[in-house]
Amino acid sequence: MVLREVVSFLNRWCFFSKSLAVAWLALAVVPTTARADEFADCVANLQQQALASGVPQATVEGPLAQVQFVPKVIELDRRQPEFTQTFAGYFNGRVTDWRVNRGRELLQQHRPLLNRLVVEYGVPAQYLVAFWGLETNYGGYLGKMPILDSLATLACDPRRKTFFTAELFQALHLLSEPGIKPPLFGSWAGAMGHTQFMPSAYRRYARDGDGDGAADLWGSIPDALTSAANFLQQLGWQRGLRWGREVILPPNFDYATAGRGNKQPLTHWRELGLRMVNGERVPASEIEAAVLVPAGFEGPAFLVYDNFAVIMRWNRSEFYALSVGHLADRINGAGTLQVPAPETQPRLSILQVQELQEKLNQLGFEAGTADGILGPGTRQAIRDFQKAHNMVADGYPGETVFKALNISLP
Image 1 (cartoon, one colour):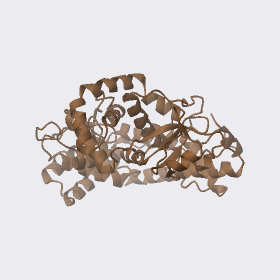
Image 2 (cartoon, helix red, strand yellow):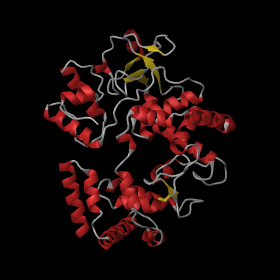
Image 3 (cartoon, rainbow, N blue to C red):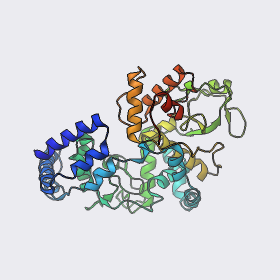
Image 4 (tube, helix red, strand yellow):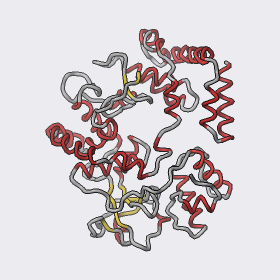
């Protein structure tokens, strides 16, 4: 197919030139009819696969046959905020006074339901409310995009074809569930309802919380919160254990020991002089925790426990998990961060991070694939580079790192 060849060429050219924006702008010159033909061919192939996977024929010939290509979905897929925002920009934009105050109101309003869920699933009420707040602003915005169109568009895009094809088929199976009727609306990536479940999570973890015989994550708050509690329990939530906490590091702290890859008992961190924000030493316990410094040594520090990893199974962003945990604490009565997230740090583009990764790799500091994502591998490579050059080895890509690598900042 002409379009498939063009897309393949652009993807290869995009990788080597490090210009995603230019490449996808170039895609816009492909004639609309060619793009429509390509999508129609892809949908025909998806129909065959769906039938083979057990999707009812009526669903394949009805809702699946009627899906539409949505260019906006591809655009949004290429610019997810977790990849470009600073910690301060992400965190401060999500843990707001309004969201805290509204969360406290809803905590009291739904207290009987939440108390029941704590007993049944072991997840404290403030966490369920915090997830609800971050996902949809407490139901204020559930998404307006037809998810079958979104998922079909992404299933016909090469970047994450396998994942979204599976989610599309799960959404099609979902149409057979009690109380579920097309069209289904949600986010551009196919997440649905008050707690933004992907179709696979909806089918596996959604629960009827109000006793009407259906799990309705759009129209029933009891269903949505019960499903969230069940999801977190199944992801491994440990009853009675918090997500983590902000801590104050001693002046002589070795930042090379930070990162989720270095879990140590709390007694270890206590011996090193870590303190809670009230000034007391961290508890003497064998519970394991890791130190995170998401904005480098100039920003706040956190000890995170196993339940932090559970939050990251919901959303694989450290920034997101820290925001959920702190928002939950604030909803439960805690104050703001003792050390605010620094707001003067520059926002890095994907291209700058790719260049950073490439130069680290060239120098023998293994940052992995130059994908523009500041994941744990890149953070460790930065930390190793900093240590080798007598810098504070906090794993943060600050100005000194970029200068040492001769990369310009905005």
